Image: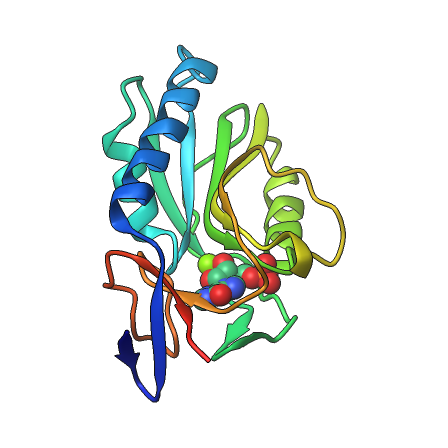
Length: 176
Ligand code: IMP
Ligand code: MG
């Protein structure tokens, strides 16, 4: 049991299982994107640890950048998605992979995909470490998914509770 701010969390996915899954996803990308020089775009802040581990397992030519959006406050999604910020790269005709820590309601991703699609990438796919299928507001194609989890609040491995808990090596779930 781990106390973060005012709540207790217990391990849901241990670090060793996360690393095995990250390697598995990277291997798929190494095959699917060989000779495509994909641009991996991490959605900050949550994706930075996942993306860094994933990137280290990439054996093909590939590039990385980050962008920011915000739709989450404390324990629940606000539903308001702000504009994407911080993307300086020209993504036209590039093979783009959006890298997310988690797809919850899916609102962030719908918005991000819409905005990136306007910039005319050669292809646009999604990599997410976690997905809460029950929380998704509408079906959304997720191309590479690490773990499907229940509709519970999780932290660790980049995910936070009010800014805290991102540094936990395991993915931990709110204990009741
Ligand atoms: P969505 O727009 O509802 O899919 O959620 C998007 C963002 O909310 C994710 O990229 C996360 O940063 C954050 N989020 C969603 N679920 C959780 C959670 O269980 N713990 C921490 N952050 C979460
Ligand atoms: Mg996020």
